[in-house]
Image (tube, helix red, strand yellow):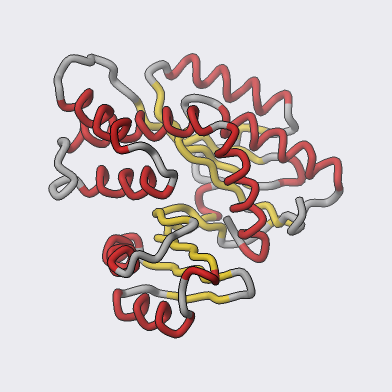
Length: 244
């Protein structure tokens, strides 16, 4: 999410989540599996697993689903190996897009990415051409009705946040990834609900859409990429209208 349209993007994402909740939980289960397989099933000893659990809680993933995914990874009975990749694209209107991917079949994923890009006005970019346009940040977004501005700002700054942004909808807290857990933990201690709580990639620059047709094509491309089973997360730098 980036800029003034982050709240409309949250609204769209929540609408999509209601429709695609099963797929979202399936992707989160894969993330849990990979994290636990890599670093063990104890979140106190596995920072990556802790981060995924935060995402699962934000998505209201049932605890049983979460525990099953971790147990499957640590039980030793599943020989599936996932490769983690990044695909960089330039989409309609020159928008920079990159997808973080976990796949058990690189060839299948590569073919799928080429097909989706080719049919939807995008090109696969060279390595680094897109990712250099983003910065990795811890991000917490909270609706205005869920927190007092002064109290939340004080809490965030005390916990190590880099920036606190308030608007008529709510609050965005940014932190160095190394400090994200401390910031989020402070907020969680106060039982403040979060719209978003994750380490993500935020654009350094934004690209305005040239016309309505490009905007429609971009939405279609993003929808197809996000719907792909192997795509773990998707980031773009489009400057979209608030109602887009």
